[in-house]
Length: 372
Image 1 (cartoon, rainbow, N blue to C red):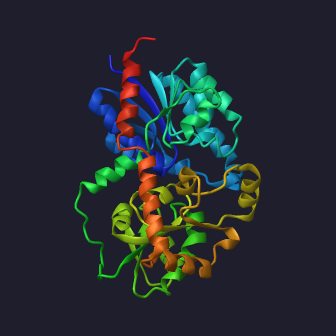
Image 2 (tube, rainbow, N blue to C red):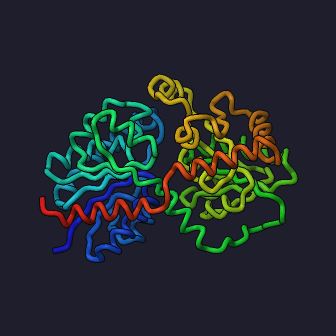
């Protein structure tokens, strides 16, 4: 009888890593049934996606509160679907606020819980680790310091390396196609995020910087899920090219990048692209974050390295002048750029090698075949 998994990813990055995981699982067991909350990548890999992450992604404290009724309705629907489907295991991918509640529910039903890409409890809500220890059967972490952090709470977890390395390795196997409109100038990549709130705050500043570097071509890596008019309305007449759905090609072509804080900071770093990290949020969200979040840095690059490798321009520090000055510093062929390139190479070594998706898939498949 075919085994069944229930998988939940609530954001675009989770869909990317979930898709790679489903693909690896299908290699091990083509008859495996995967029902999922996720996106197009998971669906293309063979999962039956019953709820798209576009309906789940709420950013920031204020937006979560404003959409609390929708979130609670989604939780109820998901629980009912799991109870009806009765999977052999539940696989949760990041998305902690929602998935922690699902983990508790699945545990109550006696369904094994596997969590891929740990919640960032080391940053805030550390007390949740005791709940995770009780309800999660196996945790797969992707940041090198997380294994020791969990060990401090008596929880044994598996460090599998960062799944972005899988995606980047696959990207490196294909020839780089020139970007549309290539004119020979060095490229500066703009990655303003994938949510409307982020884009509206970050893109005008990033685009304004382009006017001061006429010898470079500024290319916006546009998210396919964002309507083109959102970008065009914010760019105005700024000298910025827009390339949709080719973020990794843009990064492979780039000499430097301006990146909104998030997973993209690590993506740029793993491609070896010097970058400036940008973040500007609502006053309420930032006020709350500064009181609740216990980390020295906001970028994954600096968190993994435990020191400032890339400059973080946050809130009032994110100005056109500051952005222009930092970009000039890392574009110039001098000591700051060479040091950052060396640090980014070290970061890649620390992040483990490719194979996270395969390691997790093998552990899952083995657990499904082991009688309980």
